Length: 597
Image 1 (cartoon, helix red, strand yellow):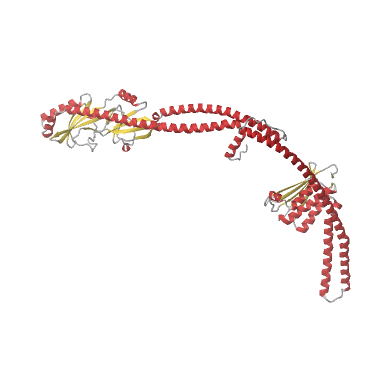
Image 2: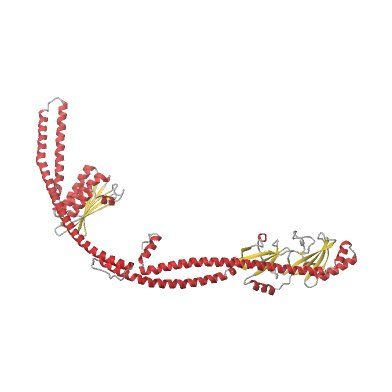
């Protein structure tokens, strides 16, 4: 296969290499694969989208349930705290700071601040300044705690504060307002330890699904926890929406899908997340089943296509064998008609075509025989005309040399005698005319001699082919001022006059074409014997031409040169390109009668 062909050509060539029996299963396989692949892809994408949508809805529902559970749990803690507070004692202390009331409040704070679930309790005034505190240790409460972090809540409402961390434990404050005539005069802050166990979280994750994780954090993103310990969790809290899910990537390029729910009455947010792959387990399994079903369908389709292709190609193979027999020249090859379907019609048409081809072959053979005979007659006539032309040239050369040469010589002698008689003539114009006539007569005599020599091939007859070729190089250079270099490894060639004359005339025509059309500045000529063939090569550095175009136009000069080469049993080859010069090569086989020295 040609590597330079474009890809589309390579594919077409590959299909052409396959038989019809191979193409039909291949094409059906490609068609089935395409249809199954498109159907599977569309089904997989639709199923995955449905699965993703259902998973997101379930995710938001679970997150909402988790937020509701935490909010209900917080309400129970607030209710429990409110139930343990003596409102009158608190009001009395906040209005009248006495030693008795102070001791009573400290005992209250110590009791509610160290009851197992709480670690500290404190009383603050309406401006959130700390008045009293008691419990396990003051260190269990944060040093700076914004108890009114959520400004959207009413100051008279009970609430929780931000989650905070001390060592490895997690705490949060419950804030209960103390009112007098519906006016807030102080606050009780009770700091609770988060005691949700990891087992409870694990049970929730199993209930939610494999890979589910529940996180609770502050709305400001200051701390995230899985309700067991703080976690290094980073989420764009400001972009949370309780109506939507969001996708993000954690460390290790792990993709997750999560949803967030704000817990009413708290500055907290609940995040429930699943690994992204957990939403596509069913769709992947569905896609695997599609692949298995598709492979089964493809296998069955290929088997059916193979059987069908064998049934279809059997008569076609018979037709192919008969066509090959006709291509080899056996026009008696017929096929058996097996039915009336399309293949049967094709078989009948093939038999009719075979009979017509046989008749056409007979007619064509007769025409070819007649054309060969006519061509041979024309070539013999052309050779005869060429011999007659050469004899006419010889006759004209002799007449010119004998008759015209003698007349010009006599004319020149008369001019010379006239010049001697008028030697003393004083008229300078007459003397000039006589000199002009004398020069013209001399030039005419030289022209007649040169033309006579060219017509009768004097150098070829007198010197032989190699010397005549070299002599003509000099004559061509003198006439057209184009240098010609002649090289030959043969000093003399004894060949029939027909070959010598043909080679010399082709040589003359080639150099004449160089002078007329090539605009060359140099010509190289070589004559050698190569592999029992004499080769005459004429190469110029001219402007060149399109050899294919000239061959199609059948120019007379090239036709004449080619005809001369065929007459002497040789071959003419012309190689040329624009602005790259022209090479004319004539090769003639060396026969037993031809010798070289």
